[in-house]
Length: 267
Length: 249
Image (cartoon, rainbow over all chains, first blue to last red):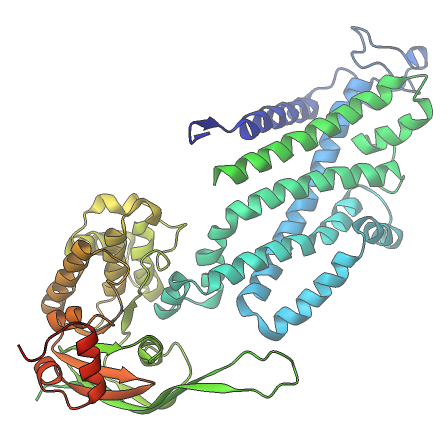
């Protein structure tokens, strides 16, 4: 973590914040102080107290428990999105970058068309076709994320495919598939990793945005964006309802951004 | 007369130029013009010529890496190549051990232990030891990298090795060591070598026969003594003169 006598603060701080968030998600998976969906009319809009560390919402649900559950949902959606985007992005980028020519032209023009389309709009279209819910959101955002990953992988493949070690592998009789995924792909990992970090952030924000618009995760499921959306009516009566989920989103995005930057400057 | 391992006749190679607009006519540049020569077993053939004379293209055509017209008859299997730039020819994300095992893995039919043993033996052969197996290419010096490249090319025990300017990226003391290594493996492994270079001194030291190329054609072909001391073409004379080799002494 130390290079040229200078500490990589981005990496250190990013790891700490991300670690903290992951710990929160892990704890939330096994234990929440209250049932996140249990309503209690008596504690409606309860303020911050020892009993309810983040207060209660309009149904008297414990916000801390819901934040734990919501950050897990948001994390799963973001991770799923990035997984789909990366997986298909790698395949598409590898094929277009390695082979070039007509395959490249067709796929990349298709890619450009997808790029020109706002991802939220694409997701909206998808939701209106297949209905809304956690898995639909993952699928919709995942597909919308493919082009950006494909582009990054493609440019790395173009850079690598003319290197002598690729020619050498060909000479030794390696198949194209093997050259693509065993010889070249490992050399794109650093670039891919920081792209994944950025993609993850965009996915967190996109999920929050979609849920805020009411087309993302559906009630009673909690997600950070969903909570923000519900909280907007009660900004003055129960400010903690909006503050804490918002804070966790900020930390999540900040942590991964710093981690991504830190990893980039490590290489 | 020794057995012929390579016979090239009327070899032509042309590259297509990139078009600036889609409507432009396709243009092509002929890089090799009816090249014919043959090579004997155990020969070290020096291939000399200025930049752009088609040396590397000839090597690639022989290895079947580019399309060509004409005939190339090879009586030996899987000739291998050592590239000019030892920094680009080793995969930066793989360890030396993996890189050397890869040709064996691709060929198939070896157990893990056999592969490991062969790699260790080959590393000793090129003057390195087995601790290099766990190193990444970036942890090696230029000379060490070129040794690894040579080792990689020799893993499948080819009978023909094409070395494309293998020492021009290295400094003089390392150059001498690599040349010595090539000469040693030539003897020990019964190897024929096509040695591409623009350095006439290195070729004199290294090769049995020389082929001088200019503009995609062979200008002169003969033993080192014939070409250096009794050359027929003016171009060879110019080359020798500009290299500072005094032919009259």
